[in-house]
Length: 363
Image (cartoon, rainbow, N blue to C red; front, side, top):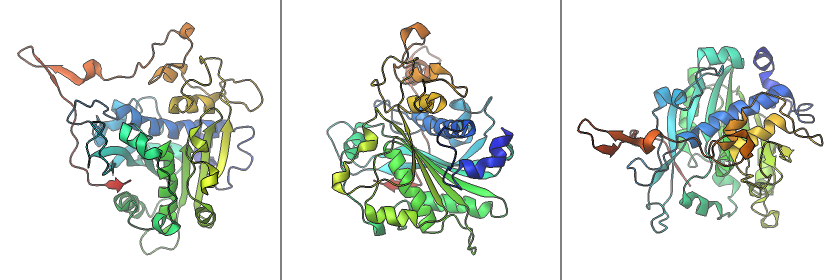
């Protein structure tokens, strides 16, 4: 772990990952899996039970969130969530999702003292989950280009930006970084969010002209922005982006480039053909599969796990593993589907209900 603490700037793209991508550096593999796990935790904690009054929200409170998603014990990279944030849509599509519903889409967290010692600096982490609700999948299919002026403005996600700025000011006397991660639709939002942070100087403490390094890790990201966005993105000297892509996943090829969209940042283009999995075409967009690929993809060489990664996680929310591995599909679930037995012997659906959203992103 000491090498990550020493080399975190290189791993966060200070030199645009020169010499780290081909072959994929072992520490970078661990680094990408670490951030992928923090991102996966948003999927794992998302309340997708439509019968629950807490549908679309987090099942767990911020103060002990990482314990509930099993990212505390045995994990050296310790964080504390400082704020949840939510997405809001005005669309009403039958009984899929109510019009005007806010859905939990991510969080801002900061590395603890213990985490700081392992990571080599105070890391401000912003996680944007991928699509979960049917309404969000519908929104994914709508891909008009967004003018650069709208992207680099304070109306895009002011509450998220304000929380990042708050933490930047709080730790202004320490070495800090801002890491923004996302999967699928969340990867596109993470790209815009990271650019917004740098373009509007949220990575600089108040009354300072010196900003920290801002890095975005985008897993399975659709294309974001046109040539104007590409030029503006590349002009931001404190910003880095690494896209992680699976050849068999169609999402990173959308929207089609004929609509004027362009690629930004660097890319890891994996062809994930794992001997542990049934087929490379089974759910190629799955985030756990992406992390499995990061652990074992070897370019033109056969797939081999180069860093430790439990294959049981492939069936966490899917059915990817060969049956010979004896791991049941979709094994990650809430005990009794959050049904609790009352003192009189009857049963009731009881979910954690977070406070009303303070940070809402309009999408």
